[in-house]
Image (cartoon, rainbow, N blue to C red; front, side, top):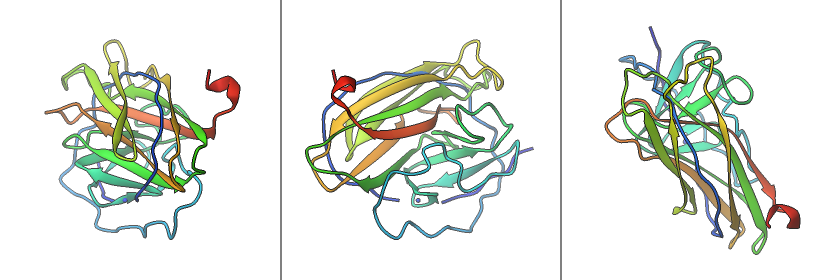
Length: 212
């Protein structure tokens, strides 16, 4: 009924704080995992693929990725995660999204160039795997900047479905301390194959009006 695979990246810099979140139940897992590993990015550059559109997953299925693998510019840094294909459930932006729980809680990170002393705002859409037969109903996770906890979030999938994911928009602000920064998302939903879902991640220079 479902298919799986596996893929990775790295990051570095620190900052300030802001934000919160919610979730749905995770996809069922197949017994296979893809062996093909895409090459990691050649060098740190601008933030990219915040909507998890690469690589493309077969519609109405998902691919599982394990620690040490890449999902485009994102590196799976622990556990396993599921890259959700078009039509499996609604994405917040584009066709694909990311469940931070594969068969177990996972995390992803991306390293990108920053200017020391500059304030940046990270925005992302949060939901959860809506399979209500998979507890807990409240999915939890956190945002990390250079490996440090910057924001904890939670999402209750009660009343949600594949066609009514109920995405909410969250933000966190940080001040870069180096020429590169690592942005990470990690599930803290234990003992479950269903976790928080993230999509449409953006990173922008924070104008004075957005920092107040």
